[in-house]
Length: 341
Image (cartoon, rainbow, N blue to C red; front, top):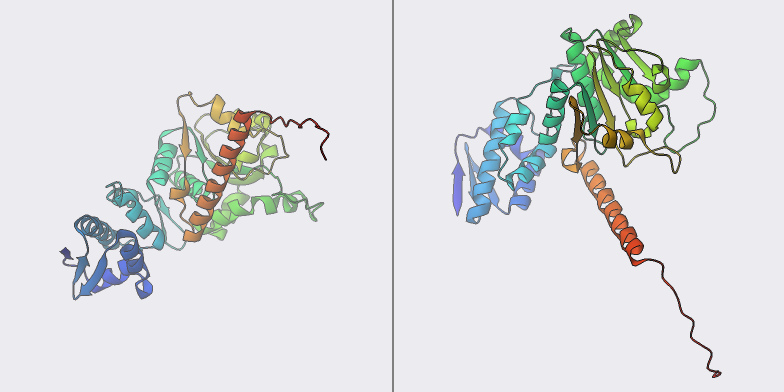
């Protein structure tokens, strides 16, 4: 079967096929078709089902290009995966949600359906828990929403916090004053703010006290009114710290709590405050829980493969442990000595 997609400009073909036809090879390999180009048309060769699916995927990617969106490998792979469920048009709906622009003019948008639900929850709920693996945009999208709310005068200030816990290393005493000691733990938050706001705007608002980046321990005893508050790396909080943080919230505030339960740095045997909060608060109105998955990873495609590999490995370990537990203790019987040697 041969299908022809007409009216595809050379510029569009270059965009959706990628440099050195890298994306075209992904499309052909994943959808089991052959793609041929001639002037302003793309010919799709293969069996009926794959050809129909490939045509729909290519139309979606063309629509993204015409909207001014730069096509990436992640978008190609994600559109293909959605096409297996007949939901490839969801990519257009996701791409239409513009949060803000970076200081360099780059648009910040959700890139997956999971991210779109996360952003919508932040808009509509007072407290949002964003849980998921590395690279799913939990902190970055929350930061973009905070900056947007601040610029639109929806809040008076932005407060960013995270527990100051070392990632499996003992760094000892760090030089400098108190701010110098905690800055390394808060560096990821600074990096995101610099990219979205620019270093100069951040410094200016920070000096006025309108943007505050501080360790979680600094939150005790405060009441945070009319603020957009982000608690990052919440899997490293204790239940007492999480309760302390949640009870700081005042009127007119919005809170986003992010964390990855697979990357806890708490001492062995310590219960995570994020895990406890998910169980305790799940039935309270105006609190949303968004679970992002490996399908929502938007970093380098290799990151998605790494996350999936670890998920598979941990799942096998849990299943093995469950089998051992259900089997009960194994008793070995020693054969009686019959006197034969």
